[in-house]
Image 1 (spheres, rainbow, N blue to C red):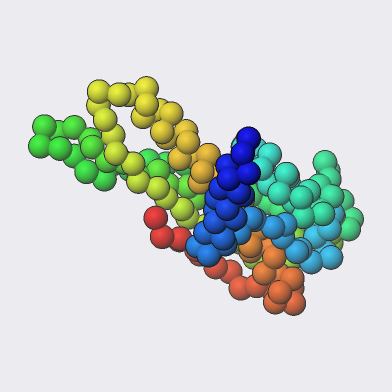
Image 2: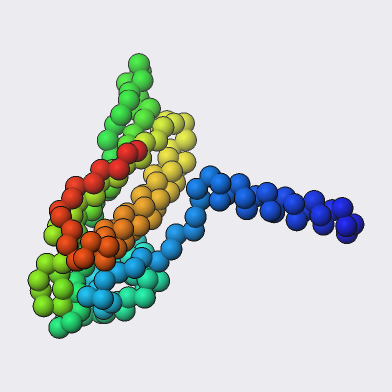
Length: 181
């Protein structure tokens, strides 16, 4: 490998790194949670991907996720975590051409004594996608990928809310967040 080739590759990597930082891209960091949440039990209606991803994110933030609730263990309760779809547009031949996938999650946090740390929060997210009647297999995969992406974004949104407790001295007002599409 010539020195010009190595120099070109090094320059290209440096330019890529500078471009990523200039556009605002930053790796997601762990959330700084209050001391009252260093031990936490999750209660997720339906479990699944949201529960798995939340456990991973909480553990990445230094939280010990407990299997059972108890004294001194905060409780993150998620009674609602629902995906739904809506038809957005229909063609002149009465075929659906565009859908929206919606994700609604409601959650609250109580401390180890059962006192509210974070009142019930509702977060709504959605993504639109075009439907191709000639490629229904691709549509199923597309919806699954959208749901996975919404799940990832939801975990981050929940962590931001939990982190807000640390930043605001343990008090956060109820909020209904509906991020833009």
